[in-house]
Amino acid sequence: MKILVIDPKCAGIAGDMLLASLIDLTGGREALDPLAEAIRSLDTCREFRYRVEKVDAGGLAATRLAIEVEETGAKDGGHLREAAALAADAAGLSAGARSRALEVLDDLAAVEAHLHQSGFCRHAIASVDTIFFVVGAMMLLDRAGFLEGTIVATPPVLGGGTIHTEHGDIPVPAPATLEILARHRFPFASAPVDVELTTPTGAALLAHLAEHAVNPYPAMTPIRVGYGTGTRTVPGRPDLLRVVEGETLPGGEDRMVMLETNLDDVSGEAIGYAVERLFAEGAVDVFVTPAFGKKNRPVSVVSVMAAAAVEDRLVRVLMEETGTLGVRVHEFRKVVADRHREELLVSLGGREYPIRVKTSTVNGSLIAEKPEYEDLAAIARDQALPLRFVNDEVRLYLSRRRERTAPEGGAGGEYPPDRRNVLNAARDE
Image (cartoon, rainbow, N blue to C red; front, top):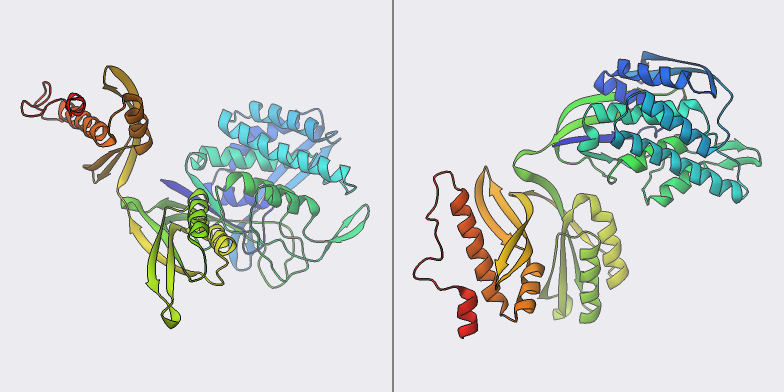
């Protein structure tokens, strides 16, 4: 499956930098011409021109956008949204990409309105260049197939120094940038520079595009890399945004972490509640092992298996719920079978029940078929039967279904002559 990593760890992210990096990655500069023409047709725009330039950015060849705009400006975020919708339709944006672009602009407008009510200055989002950056990024991502794949991002660096507002100078990050990241619980990083690196538009794009933050990169096969740059001078580092296209590793390989901590003074109830929270926060598996610790004290070793992307969240849960002062983190490689889920209608006891079934295969060969426990339990309660009998009946149905759909055919027919209907057998007992 296709994967895109947006990497703003070097110099943050802004709308022009993201669009420039995507042009560099995909070579899709001509795809933006219909959007530029649509923007020129807006009633708020007198003139709109853009150039794509190849420049040297810290020793790397990068793409930079040069924008020339003459406009009256949108009245507010709602007016800007209306203009963006018109431009997106005129440029032929797909419904999915159009919807995501408008969500970004809605987020920017909502944050702007909130901050204005709180007495902060407005962030200047009501401009056609914002439309170009947001809608253009969605257009290139959609055409390259990234919106159908996986998009992740490293935590953006925010920068430092101060920015000028109508109420005076305030420290970076800008209130709108911080508000957007807080709304989406998106982590950020710091850089010792006196320049604003991540803008509100860049933060909003990142928060709406990335499924989650990663650090380091996920395990993948890289295919191509794109570099975008802006017009700032960043002391001690190149003004670069990097995007990396890749493919997930074959065979279902993934990178996982095992979190472990020893508990010697925590009640069973507290550990049980912690386990529930860990599962709710994304743990793949949690188990508790009794052991002997220091001074021969009995301890409980809590082990948590999870994807690397949720490591920080689960460490926080472990510490909050158990009071542990340290958590061991081990990264490991995991190879999993390909899994497919479907819902089937199964006839049992004269009634039809929907049952979710997970099918696992490796290189096309069937490894296992597993009906969901919750569905089996619901049938057992409804039929007043032991769960094991319902499980047997459903697995028999799955076996017969495989025989009917096998390439060489199956035995077909009803139940094997030496096996009675398990539902009737259960009632006979």
